[in-house]
Length: 338
Image (tube, rainbow, N blue to C red; front, side):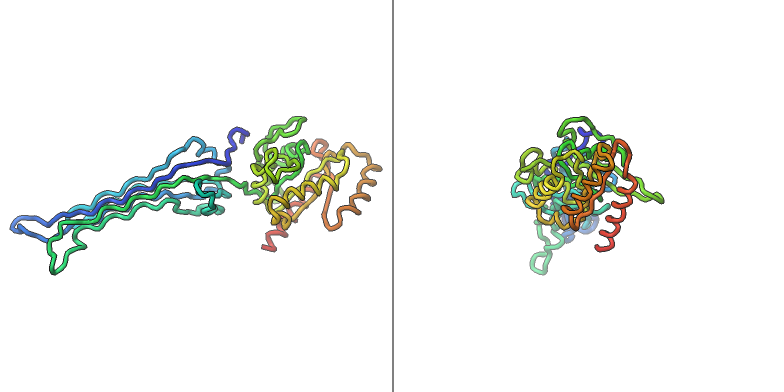
């Protein structure tokens, strides 16, 4: 998936169908001049329905969709025949899609499961035909109900990436490089900050044909929780990950301080982020000799009490299998808890 194809925010105007009107028909046939009322009901207007599809990773297919209108219900006919229901409009969305009312900003619902179906705009009910209004005192009613109008709604679809592991780190921490060596993903990689402007997803192949999904989230900068830099644009994607992998380069001046800044940004955005499992990974460790690595381990053992850490090098392919093993264990422990 190229960066330009990753779309995680769209606005759409929706209109469900109007219900068909009821019929005022009076029964007529040979030798029966004044038959009773037999007008049928109008058909239901079409719904607009959102359906989850695990085969979709982005809202790109909806990027140029501005209006969605369902079909109107058919009018009722003679012999109490009901009008046809209006055609439903189905919009398929990736798992993790949040649906909001554009006017109020209210979250209406979220789609998180494959095949999950929600009616976002209900079709109008069809009107009753005159057959329903007959009585002992009014045996030939010449009136029926009109169909009920459909609903109109402006919505925002916002995608929160559903991945097992979220890569968290400052710009240029090596997240894209790590993703490219762990998975078949081909993120844009260059030696300058903010190369990644959209989340990249990759599937990590594990032992015995098992796998898990890892997401490279655009780099955090201080103040991201307040919307600085890419701000909320990417922080919402981290909310969905069950495990957070903090990637900090080995040449960072103060690894503990950088970790605490990253953690604070997540805390200010959503304190529940801190309930997720966390693993600190020191990247670019091929730059360290054994003596320097031993010194750093002694320092990190003191500073990272209760938080697991490990050294890797994406370029030199060091520690990657151990990293996969650790992540797999963390993910399955998390699943057991749930």
